[in-house]
Image 1 (tube, one colour):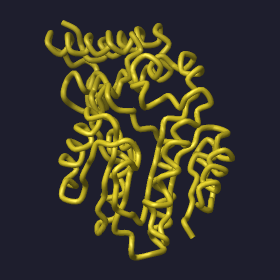
Image 2 (cartoon, helix red, strand yellow; image 1 turned 180 degrees about the vertical axis):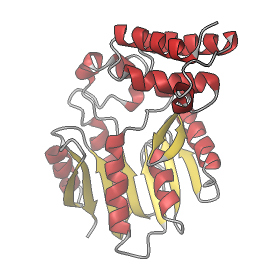
Image 3 (spheres, rainbow, N blue to C red; image 1 turned 135 degrees about the vertical axis):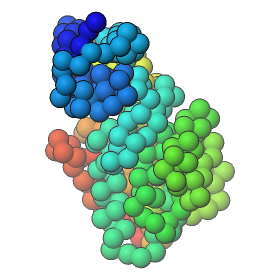
Length: 282
């Protein structure tokens, strides 16, 4: 019979051979998932035997990961803003970079008491909208996505977080068909140039939905599509928070200005990249 320590080391070995950068960290998460307990607890008792069923579950997880399937998809969830979000092959996996939008939006909201209506265009898993609603207890929000499968995941996340009474979701193409106006609009559009996708890590290029990745030839197609809707959807006192890829913020700011919005700030993520462009209608 195999013990926990041996199973962990074997998982680490296979992950390292597959080129997984954080092999030991991921192996700890995997063994915890396979045994149904926290991985740290398991490794605190390395001599403890694991059952054949637990060994098989761990082996299945490792097999998928060495094929470079993202761990979040294997486990079915990803933490974002300290909340757990269900993710599937139909949704973009939330990234820490996108928490820059949450930080900026909450900082702005803290200076006012009237943020009641939030719009999330291209909501995916719902991580942006639901994280904001979790913090802004008096707000309600609408998440829009062109993918019905993604909207189903977002609605499940809202229920799991107890936010389904304040969050609703609708299938749509950016702002098309919307008749409301909003205090806050958050957007994380696809912005990777189409020609760059094949060169990304296989976890991204092979497993995440292209619909949520590709921004066309120059990465700006979705900005060109969504920004023209914003002046009508944003209340005069409202604010837009839109994520941008590396080096894209000048082009995004130009598009915002072209359509009558005033860029206010460019906020850097933890890597020093201008990740969030904010704009107002005033």
